[in-house]
Amino acid sequence: MSSYALELKDLRKSFGKTEIIRGVNLAVTAGERVGIIGPNGAGKSTLFNLISGRFAPTSGEVLLNGQRIDGKKPFEINRAGLSRSFQITNIFPKLSVFENLRCGVLWSLGYKYTFLKFLADLDDANQRADELMQMIKLDKKRDVLAINLTYAEQRALEIGITIAGGANVILLDEPTAGMSRSETSRFISLIKEVTTGKTLLTVEHDMGVVFGLADKIAVVVYGEVLAFDVPEAVRANPRVQEAYLGSAVADSQAGGH
Image (cartoon, rainbow, N blue to C red; front, side, top):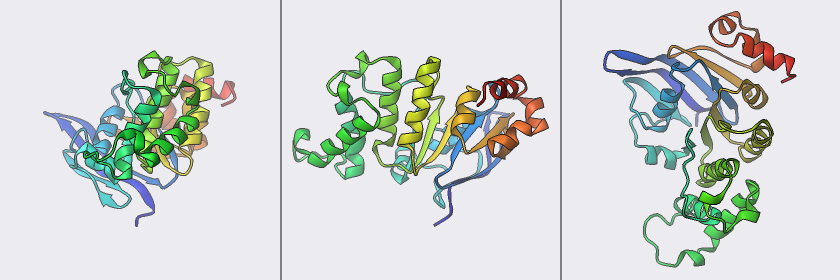
């Protein structure tokens, strides 16, 4: 098996005559936490959509644990071990916290689409859902409908659903968007805790989040990776500062991140 959990090889995506992703190469080691940053329109979300199967690449390869997944359907990629969350919270609003999480674990436990027993009798699924609920700190909201949770709690629930299937590569798309500073701080701690031992890629605009969470940072500008290195090297990279970071780096340094 490849030592890389995720590899992108000369990945390209065009919409009509417009090339959005222009030959991206990236190799993420298993267990690394990678932050993907760049200006609006740089192609970050398109990159996530290519990795997770929402878009098929125009050319190039995406490898998950050494196996090509480009061109596969999103559910096939998910079953192969990659899961993602979205910018917009993606949960079942009319189900309880517990029921949301149980839905997330069913396939990974082999229950698929045919139920020979009532859900309440699926002890392994119920136990795993309970474990996830404690992990994301929502055990006191077990029977609360997801629609009645706070925004931060809904995002935490989505993280729980994202990891419920046991994927070893997790993609989070702007996980702290819309949160207060205190909520963001707690959420970073939660993300670190629940992704321990997993490979994490996150798109994030908050530089404090990126520099506080990531082992490495990939800077995407105009559909290309301008830099991919540890946070300190990215801070000091003149090309990155000129193209994107600028005052954001100075602000994060002043804030002690």
